[in-house]
Image (cartoon, rainbow, N blue to C red; front, side, top):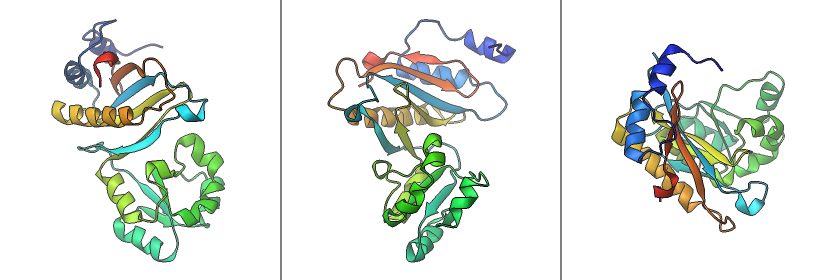
Length: 230
């Protein structure tokens, strides 16, 4: 893959093969985010889990203390009083069965998070094939299947992110923007690491965190020493 001049210049600042301390990596990921827009800073954490086994799955959510810097569009599946509550709490879209064809047939995906009341999961389940692959399916572990829609919406707007293993047992999550201070990024990153440590499945043997990389949208990856992240 051919890289641009800016990327090549930024990559020169990163020592190949070096495992950085957390504070160094945070500083460096900000320095190497040189695009004209406010790049997203992401953490990519390779685990020692085998996600093919149910007892080694990781899925949860955590509220980042400084948010993600991104405006999140929330869709809530609810009826009657709960639908009114969701609207009052600031949900961007609220609906029920009438949204099924809009999403399935018209390919409408102008939302980033889906929340549903438990009684609506039968309806939402019909969208499993389209929401599932996009990571948008509501889940009780992530707090997105709940009767307390106000709390769910408030937490998401405050910077709640969901983390889960992908097919290669890596967790990919945003921890902020390049415009954040080093302290804000470090706080968010530590909060994420604490949550992932708490979520460690008992069945995982050997090293839990195999590799940790911080990267900006257009910048190079910066590897952190996983052995020191407890």
